Image (cartoon, rainbow, N blue to C red):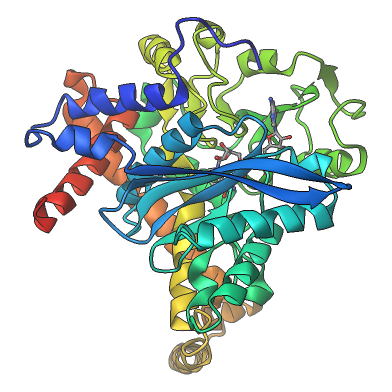
Length: 474
Ligand code: NAD
């Protein structure tokens, strides 16, 4: 990533600047703006773990941005540059995100300053369990109050350790499994959670391309089919988003940016084979079917239709915003475009699908997982076979009445009752469609006041949080 421009605000200031732009267009009661904007609390913990013959001290955070709805929700990130400013910015984004996609949670976020690649699995487990203990004893992990999820550097494995740590401490809590989401399936996880954020990015783009008028605003025409995509970060979010767009929507992935440089091939790069290559070699260097560019971030400026930053915050900033060619950016990562870059890009006519919407697929399916854990039953278990027999009856009657048979493949599809995965996908698709339609409506109505998609998203979220505070009688 390029060095930070001296005029660039911090990540949290950047989120606040974008918040203020929207709040300035609203008629909020005195003091409400400030109440919503600030983080309620941020807990810093320093703990020691005896590893490799010495005590190693780690620093972690859990920030709670807003408790207008509880539990509060947000991922736990493992990265060396985790700090208070970052977790507070991410916690704020969680509040706005949940409000926008109507997930009934407040916003939170956590992080641990650690490079997970430097530790063996059993060491990481000990560190994670100790970090979890520090948060559990302060109710910063709790099914009714604060429910973490995976983020950068963490996944189902870490969530399983956290869930187990909670269960050991609170063994009489019947809802213990709901203390964290993104767990493996056998420990109360839900089908479709691993790929949910990437799937949500795909659904968001599909919905965008259903709105011809918005596609034209970005200076594009047609559908997703054939669109050239550049993705930064082939981790959980970037990999799934790029893979689904390539395999199911006909997009051509022309650039992949990773830690050790970028791959470029205007003829298209096979996402699955790059992922396998990274798993084998640890990076993209030497991948045979594309050109390797050492200074990877320059490929953010590559000629393409859709740019998907899916790695870090502030990667599109005052230094490179002017050179970005993509007419459409979808913020799969949190905060990849700084407030300054956002201004430059908007003036250029670039359409940005904002993070708080674009990557909301993860928290949406986390919400479904939490509901599943509280109800102690898999989605579809009661209805699936009943639905199948009703469908069977209907199809048989139609065939008897018309004297014609459905084609074999079609008949089977019509008979199928919904299983957990199809219900999760349907719930996620519905959520992404409705949230986009809400944003687009505000965007179109208030465009003359300078409202873009991001400001529209903030206007909707701030209004919903403010209404909750007003009803609560604050
Ligand atoms: P991840 O750790 O699985 O993947 C991150 C990827 O980015 C890795 O492949 C890493 O090698 C790559 N990367 C790191 N530094 C880079 C650099 N300088 N240049 C290019 N690539 C780099 O993380 P993730 O879960 O996919 O999260 C990515 C982003 O999406 C984060 O901003 C996160 O907050 C956001 N997000 C994640 C989820 C989720 O469900 N995992 C949900 C919402 C938002």
